[in-house]
Image (cartoon, rainbow, N blue to C red; front, side):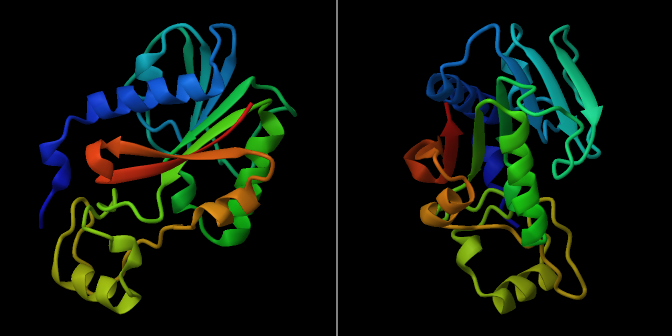
Length: 205
C-alpha cells in the first residue's frame, strides 16, 4: 500500500524536531541526557555532539558512533539509574507502543524519577497521517476496519496478518496525557508541514 514517507525528507524533519526540543527545554551543553528508546540514534544523537548522552533501547543497535554517546540495553519501565541522575530525559515515539496501561504508567514514573527535567514526544490524537500505518486518521478507525485492512494488505512495514492482527497504539487527548504527566506543559508540533504528521511534545523544566 501507499508509503507516505517516500515523499518526505525524514532527516530534515528530525532535525527541526530536535531544534524544537532544545528550544523548549533550554538545553545546555553541560546537561547529561538519557534518551529512552534511542533506536539507531537517528532522532536525537545524530544532531548532538556536545552533551553526554546515554541511549537506552530494548533491541535496536545504534548506527551512531560518537564520543559523547553511550548505548545500553534496557527496559524503560525499570530503569537502572539513580533518582534524578540525568539533567534531561528524552523519549521520542516510544510511549504510544507500551502496553498494557499499567506498564505505561510505570514507564512514565521512571521518566519522572531519573530526570531532573524531561521531554516526551508522542503522536497527536488527531494527526492527519498516522505515522506508523501512514493512513489518514488510522488511529480513529474502528478495530474491525483495522483488522480487515491488515488481513488483506501489507501496510508500510506491517506485513499482512492472516488473523487480522494489528499493533495497538496509545492515542490519548491532551487532557489524558497531562493527567499522566502532572505539572508539565504540552504543545502541539507539526512534525511534517501543514500538520500532516503532528505530535504532542510534553516537557518539564
